[in-house]
Length: 490
Image (cartoon, rainbow, N blue to C red):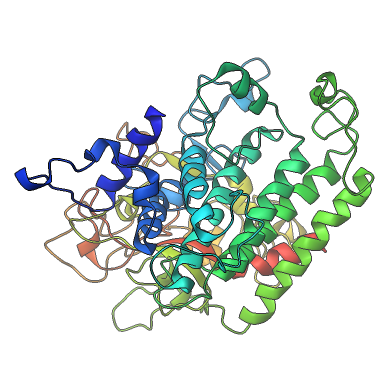
């Protein structure tokens, strides 16, 4: 198939392999026609395939002029952009459709293509992941490495499917490259019930957990613990979704569920017997997997001193620095992170943290959700205007930060604070001292959308603040999430 050759030539080019032709080798297969049978024969080939997908699939700051992962709540009631999303209107909220970039299978196709060519050579003749022992492996290289890279591909497919499932719920499950045939494509386009998609994602993660290496330095490669944590997240998501949307059109067999009108889903039954059993199935998986991570990392969590460093003479706050440092290899609770490098792979998160978060702002309701330092909600201390001496009210940002959860104390920016402690000629776009919120200017990077801005991702060294040339690390998965997942699943 032509698409195989096109994809393979791109894959080879991206992985750094070079093929040359000379007069003595005119019978060589042209580069654009290199077959999978010839290419997927080395462990390094599988690694290159996974490497080529890391940046596109795994959570990271990306490389654009945005606030990276710290803007991911921008369409919720926690964080808002300059223009409110359509979901806050009664007439403009529309269902996503095939014309948007969300309904796509390009990355899923790439992974399926590699797996369908690699697994038979690994000894899994049907390329379905049912024989992952490697006993009949014919791929050259260290067997443990081969298993690990195949595990990475299963993890990446689970990640990509989780994104689609979160967006659409019911979704097609496709595990092999499809022929350019209308009938075959139509058949494959049938949408499976959402819980079946979740089960498929969990099965891919189970395969990944079986194959992957344990977490090791520098923790920039996918590992077993990251897969276990993601498994807890997926299971919790589906278990709570089924629980809270029970008997509605948003769950299989619920009142008005569109899947019921399809002949292939008209008599659908839950694998566990009914929706209550299905809820228990997912929540129990969420509890078991999150408990595994939580128990092993509960004494390795990063300390938050509750104090924002404001001079080089003051001790650093390890928790604050975790979100604003180059190398996270020594931070135990970080299970997987992306490395950036000056003048090679960069982002603009640091500059966005220095100013107004580049067109997104946390909301007042989000700020008010942070508890007081004694664990009580703000509303137990009097009204929002006056407070009672412990809760200081919100007439100023200074007042908001008093006696509050230490995370709010260190990350909510207050006018007059020092954003930079170590000056450098590099970093010309740094906001050295925090200004009053600039809510009226039109400069998107410096505008404070809500008046509240956070400094997460903003290091104290000015060298990181050249426009779009930031290079602090981006956290993909943290063990801390496991404690939260366990509590919610319980």
